Structure formats: C-alpha cells, structure tokens
Length: 339
Image (cartoon, rainbow, N blue to C red; front, side, top):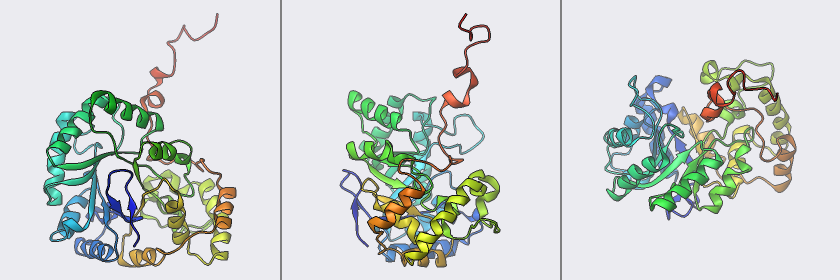
C-alpha cells in the first residue's frame, strides 16, 4: 500500500481508508466479524480508520479491534450530529464537544484521536467558539488534528479566516462526498483544500451503493439503505450508472474498482473511504488497489459526468438555514412587490 500526505499535517495515510458505518451492529453485522475485517484491512496496509459517535456502536467495535494495534492506525472520528433527545446533545458548542470527545475516547479505548472532525456545520454556534474548544483539545493532547466534513467552500474559507484572526487551530482536513456521480467538490472544495494544505478524506466513492455493480436499470435494488435514501432509487442516477458499464467492461474492471480508482486519481484527494460490510467485500476492494485509470478512460468518464457536476444531490448533503427556513428567503407579505 502506498501512502500519501494528509494535507500538510505531516500524517501519512493509505489512499484506501476504512469507513466503519457498516460495522455498527444495528446494520446486521456480527461484531466479531467486523473486528476481523478491521484486522485484515490493517494487515493489508490500510492505516486510516474513520468512524463517528453517531454510528451507533461503531466506535465501540473499532475500539475492540484496535486493542494492541492502536499505534498502527490513523484514527479519525466525528462529532456534531444528534446523540440523544436533549437539545444540547448535538452541535459544535463547547458544552457538547467537551462531553462528546470524552465519550468517543472511552468507546474507542484510546487517550487520543488523530483527526477529530465536525460532522456537519453548526449554524447555531459561532465558529470561533467551536475552533476554541477544538484548539483546547489539541493543546491537551486529546486530539492531534481537527477537521470538517461535508462543508461548503464558503464556510471552509470562513473557518480558515477565523482561525488565523483568533490564533486558533484551523481545520486541517475536510471529509466531503465524492464519486463519479457526485463531482461537485471539484469546482471549489478540492481546489480550496489544496490551497490551504488540507487533507481530504472522501466518503461515498461508490455513490452510496449505486457504483457497486449491484444496481442496474430495471433490476431489483437490494441495497440496505434504499428504504431511507431517495437518491439510491433515483432513475437519473441509475441511468448514468448504465452509461458507465460499457467503459468499465472494455477496461476489464469491476464497477467497484473503477469507482475507487476514479476518486483517488484526483490530486486533491488524500484517501477514499471504503465501507465493506463483509470480508468478501473487503477482498474485492483490495484486489483493485493497484488499478490505475488511463487518461482515455478518465476522459470518457468526464463525457458521461462532466467535471464539477453532481448527477443529483445526495440526501445527506448539508443544507444551510437559508434554504431550510422560508423566512430567510421570503420577504414578509406586503413587502414583496416592486410598487
């Protein structure tokens, strides 16, 4: 396994990272088998493991797997999404992050987190407040580097500016969605990350399952997440997958290998997170680790999905208050006319 710089953090990571959402027992996986999958990934040279407090018992399972092997991996986790019914059991406030990081450390069975990421922007908390508590965690040795996830380009710039102005730790990484079907980050996010020396660990390289080869037009869709993710049954997305099948076949590549090789080919991408549910899934993905796409094949992909475009939006995309709250995009009645 080759290793790449995680931005300018000085940390080296494998181009394949291990995402652990599917290891949560509520996804139907046996915890012992999940531990074996994690061990095999580490044995194969994958040194980046990414999880989140929101992923049910995933942090506990990762913690079990890393007993005696903690120093072999770059351990990343995330904070911010709701962890309970209480109004303060979420977000990026000092109050919540101070509690959440201790919970993650306990579940992971470690005294430090290599990359601690804000899972989504929190419009209710001042960025300086968030960066301040994250800076304190770095200074306390509980966190090595801080990052963001699924963050718009404008907010990445804002966070960098706030950190410089206030003398705080800045976000060193970003974890956006990226696949052949969702290339929107090529327009601004990836260039910005490169400009600011941020490492980029992309999630969803298989289009949340559509680029695994299991979903075809007119066929049955047996993906576990299809019941709560509309984009997994979107006919437009499935139609684009059909267009990708011929070039993949001509290149002699399974769709999974094409998808992974595409994501790690971008110079702004440090690693792509794969999320195997079974040992067989991991074996299949590892078999494609040496695949390198030719310029001709990348050009064909560009023709099917132009650079910087998304086929359709993901259900998990960040939607700012300006889009969610009607009062922020409509003048009061009686004040909307020009005369």
